[in-house]
Length: 153
Length: 107
Image 1 (tube, rainbow over the protein chains, first blue to last red):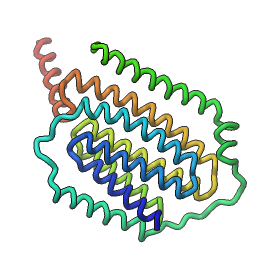
Image 2: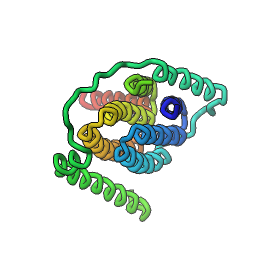
Image 3: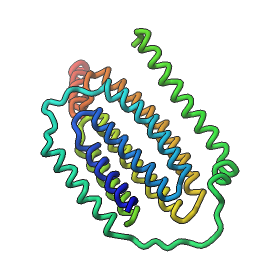
Image 4: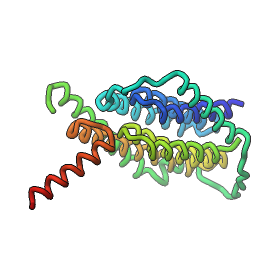
């Protein structure tokens, strides 16, 4: 039951993220998409991926909110409640498809490595390098914001 | 209940947004939805089969996706500041006008 509710929430949030005219509302709906995705991973037993999705989602959304504030122009007409409700109903109808339909998947047999082994024994170099890339991006954003605070262009 | 159909619907919503939206940030949100649909499919498949390698690869894909998002957003802010608009149609029009001005200058 919880799986169905989460998937319905995910699809409705995705519909709203596309539908809202104002960029900040759209980013808020995208936050819902990230949250429901992380919860779906958690329910399915992928705990590490859920935590990572949550952390990455928070970082992405913080940057998106900042740029949304910088880029957004006031929409010419306000979004009406009726059209928002229509999108909500459309999202709810769309979410019926994954609840009712199913595609059978055959599970291949064979042994596999655990998450920890895969991450640190096989892909350790990638993990360290990508952590370095993310840290560089974070420092770059901090420098831009610092420059902006001090009146630079 | 099936996650393949769920990710397909997410993909369809993302593609619809990519084709219909004119604001640069909304286009980026649509791209994020498409990326989420792809990772959702892979992670759910890997975790339902108990495969750690699939989950580990998707964690790496997340970090790449985040770094790419940061660069794309920086480019969006630069373009928006330079041209004063975030509308794709207006940006294309400006580019065409610039080209026409350059051609006139050469003549």
